[in-house]
Amino acid sequence: MGNSQRVTRAIYPGSFDPVTNGHIDLMERVVGLFDELIVAVADSKDKKTLFTLEERIELIKVTTAHVDSIEVIGFKGLLIDFAKQVNSRIVIRGLRAVSDFEYEFQLSWMNRQLDPNIETLFFAPAADYAFVAASLVKEIAQLGGDVSQFVHPVVNSALTEKLPIDKS
Image (cartoon, rainbow, N blue to C red; front, side, top):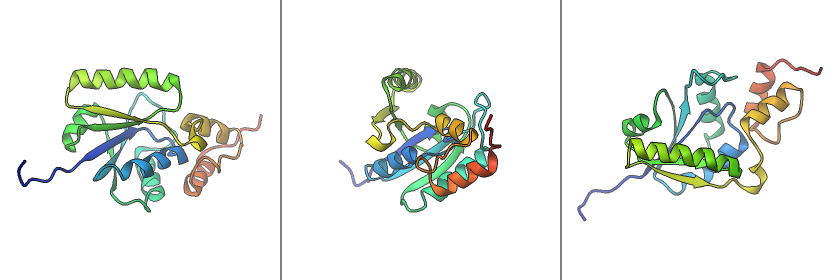
């Protein structure tokens, strides 16, 4: 072994539309395992997002300001290309249910086929967040439901401002 010090940088990719308490919990737990955690916010034209890429990045920055070693970056294109760009080979993914596992395992396998150096680490959510999904949070908020227990107060305010309430 030489004198070079290895820096471990992990990537936590997602659309984060919106960032939930489950996402934040995972970030808080993962950050202690690596020197740096890059939250990679996907700018996918195929996914219709409620918040713009810039808004999602800002919401994550605000809600994780208390956590050291997190960098929030938007990206387009293939995750493996982004991983090379930021010099990381570790991808973090959260799994809420068996259905998540099947999809995430398929993505993980495909990423390994495209770049054998990419490793995907799966994390189970804390029990309080096992059922929290950003899509459900948006749907509940759009129907006028209270989502304050699922998201940071800043995100809750952003949802209230962004969504027309449909009580029909």
